[in-house]
Image (cartoon, rainbow, N blue to C red; front, side):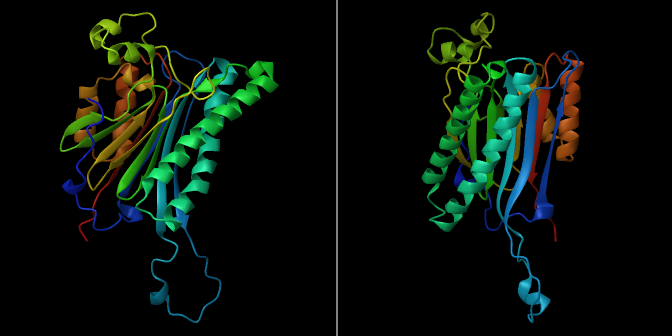
Length: 294
């Protein structure tokens, strides 16, 4: 279930969603077994905003000023390395990538906004810069040596979504009641499957199946950037493996298909993971654009 991107002509992109038409929510939980949470997440919106102090213009002339969303950003990160190091790695990755994206998104809009290649390149470079930053922190302080994190980032620039992934935190999209896993896990088990050596079922039983082959701050980092169209009614979800190790794709599809709100979907999926054991930290973000009837 990987990466058949939606057809750009299959949805109405005639206008951007208004702020009240974005339904998005995220949460993180320590799980039922762990004593500390090494996951972090972020939801934020970048805007082009004009602050009006004094003017002779009527209010009608200023309608919409300051409400032109440049991008909506969602991120999850799952710390690797144990204890404080893993928590710090995921926290630093989220905060630092947010700053880099904020710097890059302006260039995306002020230049040719149809040229997403440059922006995709900037996102790729941002992930590598954070990777280098964590490596430097580990070299400077032995207590931080080996700290690393997964990273899955969505940048929603209507009507497209840019996805950056390092590690095994996933991005899914639900459209027309079909769930697609857009990202591929950067694990040794998945690498073996991709090479055709074993089937997915066979690879699950390997002791190295879930070992990460790529992380931010680890020995190797290979950010993957994708660009897909999105539209009204498409549901996007990003999550750490604390959810997906316990909740099947079919259950995710059922939850997203029947959701009444992003918050309800997140809370139901969290409970599913906890009911199934909750052996790891659990983080999930769900978002969609819902067209208003007015």
